[in-house]
Length: 463
Image (cartoon, rainbow, N blue to C red; front, side):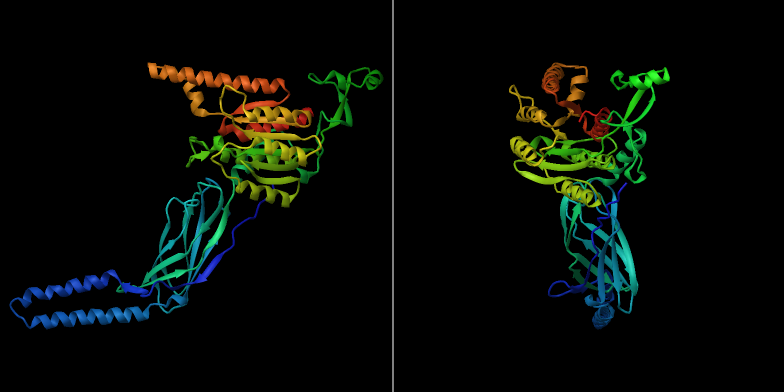
C-alpha cells in the first residue's frame, strides 16, 4: 500500500494581548473581597473595624497587582498546533496544542481553539498547567465533512498558582486544512480484497495469469476452462487435454465517475458508525478503494466528479503523485442542491478518453414515469466504453418493502415501496439489455462490491 503523508503543517505563533484591557481578576480575588466583608458584622458594634475592612481590601488589591506582574507577558508564551495525522471523514484523530512558556513561573492555562463544524461539533476547550518550558495537551477530532476547513485563532486565559490575577491573550494560529476521505477504511478494503482474491501487488513484480489476450504458458485442462482455449496441437502431442493460459492485461484505463447531485446528498445511518454520512461520502470512499486496487493491478485511473458543472477532472495516470492527486480531488467533491448535469459529464469524458476503457459510474436516479437522463446517457457510452453503472440503493426503502404491514398506513407505504423498487429494477434491467453492467448496491457494501466486480472484469477480460 502506498502511504499518503499529507499531514497539515504545524501552526505556531507568539501570543499577544487580547482586547484593550488584557487582564482581569481571578476567582480568589473575589473570594478575598467577600471575606473582607466579614468585618462588617463586628463593625456594627465597633465602627473602627471598618478601617480594618478597607485595610484588608487594600492588601488583597496589592497582592492581586503583585500576582499580575509575576505572570508571564503574552509575548513570553508561544502556541503551536501540531498534527500527527491528516484529518479524515468520520475517522477519529487528535490535535496537539503545545505551549512554550519562557516566563519565570508556571501558569494554569485555559485554552480555546477555534475549530469549525467541519472538524468538531463544538469548539475545543483545554486546561493545562504550563511550567517554564514546553507543555502539551490534546483534543479529539471526528470530522463530519470532507473538504477544506479553516481553523481560527487560539485563545488563552492563564493565572498563577495564587489565582488572583488573570491575563487574556490570543495567538494567530489560523490555518486551512483539508479533510480527506476515510483513508484507513479504503486501505482496509484494499488489503482485504487483494489478499482474498490473490491479486499480487506491483512491488512484488509477479505476473497474473487469467483470460487475457497475450499467451503466457500451457497447463493441463481443468474443469471450468473455456474450450476455446484448448491447444489441440499440444493435446495431440501429450495425448491429454492441454489449455492455453493467458496473461491478464495490466495497462488498462479505469475512469471513476462520481455524481454529486442532489440525490447523493441524502444521509444514511449505518450501525457502528459514529456519524451519519451522505451517499456521496460513501461513493467517495468506494472510489478511493477502487482506485487503490486498480493502481496496484497496474491500471491507469482517472477521476471525474460533477454536479451542475465539472467539479474535479483528473486525467488517467498512475504512480504515487497520481494517488495524491486523486485523494486531494476526492476530498473536494461536494454535494449540490440541484440535479447533476449528466450530459456535460458524458461529453467531457468522451472528449477526454478516446481509447476504450472501463467507466465506473457511481450515481443514483429518481423513480419517475419517464426514463431518467442518467440512464439514457449511460447507454450512449456503451458503444465506446465498458460501463459499470452502480446505483446507490436506499436502505430505508428496502426496509419498508421487506416489512410486513400491521396497519392501513403501513400497507400503503409497503405498496409504494414495492412499486418504487419494481420501477428501479425495470430501469436497471433495461440498462443490462443495452450492454451496461448495471447493479444496485447498498451504501455499506458499495466499496467492496465495486472492487469485486472490477476484479471479475479483469479476470474475465471483459474490457
